[in-house]
Length: 322
Image (cartoon, rainbow, N blue to C red; front, side, top):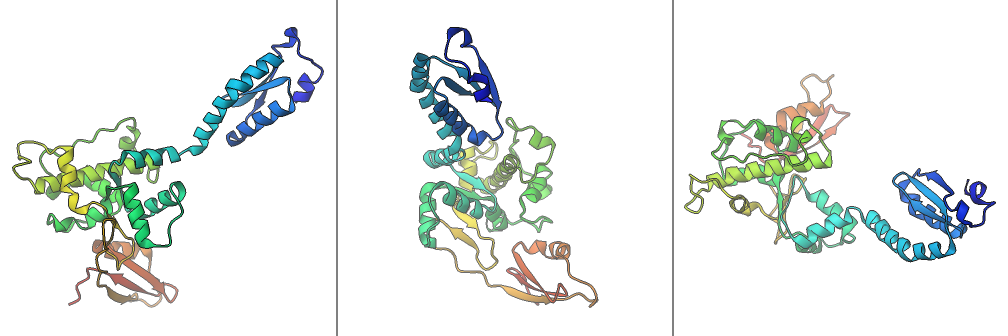
């Protein structure tokens, strides 16, 4: 296309405005396409646009000026583009603000591996380095599972899943209703209030923050003292302080471990009970829905189907056998 359009011209003032537009098919290739056009056609200059590449004939003087200024700027833009989420990671690392997540261990490992360095062979080294990157981490799943250590709640018909907790705190039962409960207003994300976008990263972040603030408020009101008078709403500082016993304790998605402690030694593993389960009717199979329905109240549960789902072995932490 370029040869056909410009091949018969030498640079002259009357053909200066001659140009051709090339569509962009893959945005990540634009930089290399532009560089190759400029290299192959010394009389032309390629300009990256929003959705196309503009090719124009230029004089030798113009080309020298463009090479001096445009290329350096474009290289900065390309580097900025390819850095992508690395910029967010570096900002989080530098500002040292509290990190809030739900069942966040795998997310932390992915951040470490993809934006910091390869995961180390040593578990203790991983914990120490992660703690130096993010010194304050809250895991809402761990907090909710262990909230009875701080406030005794009657058994709620809700597991520790993120969307379940979000729905629970949107319309809380009586025992979760407190004075001065924070009103959480959406900022540039009103659609998340009106609709569900499960597993959309922005939506999950929004409802995680929502759940975290609601839990912290319950804890703050439970621990109310002269420093937090009942006639005043707790400040954000007080909310964080109320959850201080849970800071840097990350839920571990395996039944025998209580949590990962980023500040020191992990607690001893849980004592587990095992059940062998089979349906009353030998012709029926066990289903995942049945396990979720009957065992979700035990919070931490692992099971494995046996005999083509004719039976299962279940491990439960807090099952009391009589």
